[in-house]
Length: 255
Image 1 (cartoon, rainbow, N blue to C red):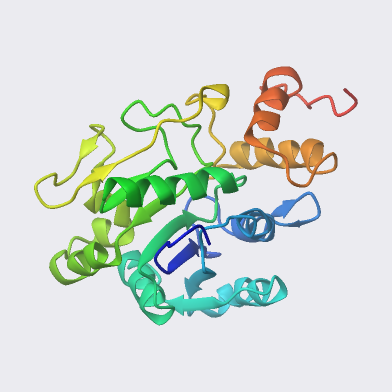
Image 2 (image 1 turned 180 degrees about the vertical axis):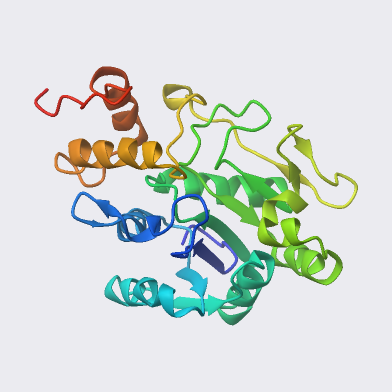
């Protein structure tokens, strides 16, 4: 934990029943499940007091609960499609005064950038902020950061918002991603932080929603993890620019 940070819970959402790529949470990533590799990376964050894997109560998600136990972190099991409730219930259980939200299909979160987001969020007095995706010209690659959310704001959403889509996607209550602007600026103060110039690459997507994106991230891990398990986003950029060969060609692992 950094300085006098409020009690912070990094909560990762995962389930086996993804509609776009079922079972992706347990797909292989350099010899271990995707979620396991993500846990390895976020354990290097300094701001969270607790890291929680938040999944559903469905039996098909039992392997995720077992994986969390293997990695020594708690698993919260709650609502399947009401992510507002799942996050709020998990945050309440673990006494969180700040939520760091991370979807567990972002294959290579950058620990220092998650910490940076959390500190900036508090310094600016935001209710919601993100460097998880490129918004407001922040320059971030898609998938290396996190969202920071005030639990009180999420509690307001839980009590006042019934729209199923906004219950399933908590961030839509705070930011209008289609139009790159705050969703309700009169109620919620939201923002972001500028990406360091050496890895300001908003063209990169390090997120897994399709078979093609999985193949990309799997190749990335097979190349980089064997060389350095704590590889940085700058290593990913170098690999992407000099090694990765798209369009169904195999990357050159011998460089």
